[in-house]
Length: 147
Image 1: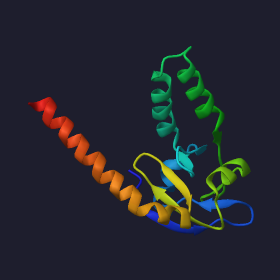
Image 2: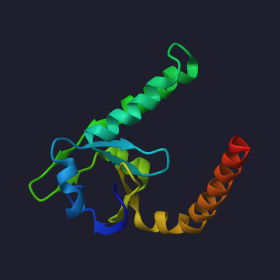
Image 3: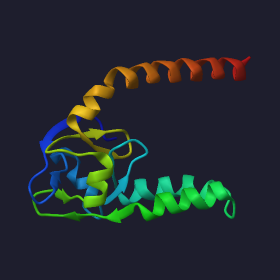
Image 4: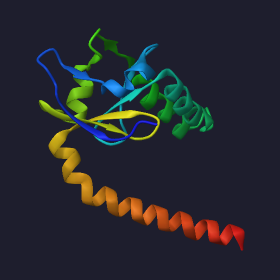
């Protein structure tokens, strides 16, 4: 599980470190992708395959299915990682995420996200509120199912 948030600076070569405690999980491969929020997602090969399973579960040959595949697969790229555990980010993904020099690498369970530091911190109260609402909704749903 990837957890925590880590302050870094993107260097002039557009590299951001993977937190040292997580580098081993990315030894075989690192994939960078456009997040559903304005951030860059770093996937391990295993996490990428699990996300691809979700995308592939959307019926093919439908507009929603084809668009989901186009959006997902066209925005996933192998990432270059150097010997110091830094990942070189793509220009188009940096632009999409609105990254400045100060970034946060955020663990969100099965993947890491790279955010512009100020943008992520500004979302804090909204994210917390949505987590509380989603948790309450899930509890209600489970009560109905058990009843």
